[in-house]
Image (cartoon, rainbow, N blue to C red; front, side, top):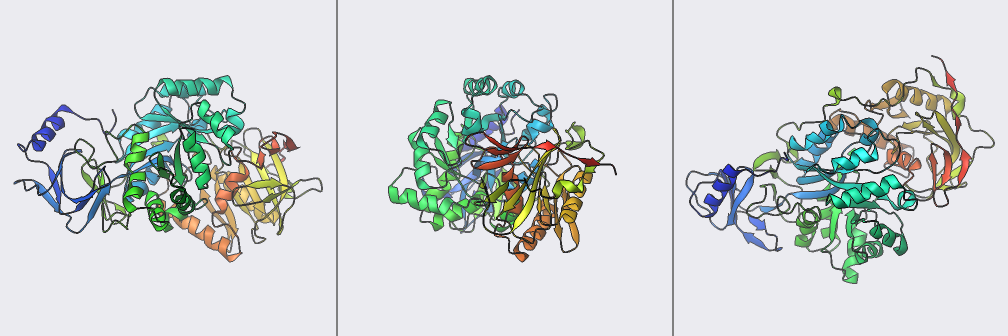
Length: 564
């Protein structure tokens, strides 16, 4: 049963309070409240159980517990329509950070999990929705590989009330070469009334039209006002992304305001927030701040963070509004210009104060699940796999996320991508990274491939060995040698607390800055080197691939091993 399901007892008591006959459990009084009309009015909020019973002026009710919020502003809990809650953190860790920052509803991408858990264990993962202090809905990914949860098994899960979406569906290569398995999954989603979220970076209007024809209902890959408008014209919702890799909200908002584009079918998303970004900027609160700073009316920014995405998800009867009958999930702010909440209420309970959760958040029961291992090899990769050969191709980073074939500016480093399932490896000369990277390794990639870059084969080998020993992880060669964040669950996830994860990322970012690295999210760059959902050249299981043509520019070869 969903955590937000109503019950007859609360419904009777709630209507009794609305009629003025009964006493609520809680009254929050004295604040200015943001209403679903965009109006700001001095109102009190009466709560019964998990839901709001009344929103009215001067609710003086004898016997009700009262919280004085005089001088504060109360806004709806935020709605995140596209969140990566796994990698490197576990879902409970991410959700704790999200709720503390005012997020009342999360649509969670099951990145990595479809390759780690089978159909028997998947329901135990999804059951987390009933245990966390937020409305948690799931989005099921359609990639054909690597899967333990097969596509037809994922399609059956769309009958669950806590599964809301299929996504991310990439226009290239998935929709371009639409196969029967994906077609059945998309048809199943439409039959279940689920949303279908797209992934169309740099897409032309024709490509966006093809995505809409396949049933895509929203997309989060816009990086300009023109790209937002192209999606809206095709009947899609456009999610405006704001994170460390793509902090694009200010530019998009300015362009949309200048063009007079209606924003009724837009919302904010963080997409993938790294620990460093979350610590420095936040989550949806950072997008609200950026939008207001770009000239958007504050009430419009809060609408894009609450009732609009709730409407898209079909959840506006439960979240995203401060109105009777809705969950009592709202944020108490010092001012409308400060979206990071002082107090967070979730389903009628005060759960966070000043950015800190008051109680631990439940997590996935990892130890009870049969999680696929990253690699079963007892041997280790031969050090010579990290020595460049004369015939190794060249690639260069055009940006933090885009890799192109051919040499580029800057120092030459070795880059190797290893597939632990097929046990094949592809090497290349990579340009565009700082020379000071002696070794940087990560298995936190879409297909859990190991990506290694560096100038020193010895340091690179040591980092790779440490990752193998940990069952997957992120490692770099720093001032004191190997610095490692183990990711023991499939090479993608750790159950470590957020403070430990963010401390590692802080050390990594400090080292990156010390060597003059142009990119402040280096693990994200490694992730995209091996991501077939982006344009340009990618280093994948089959080798170095041109993503537009599908041509394999250089084939991967069997990896060589040494016995320990």
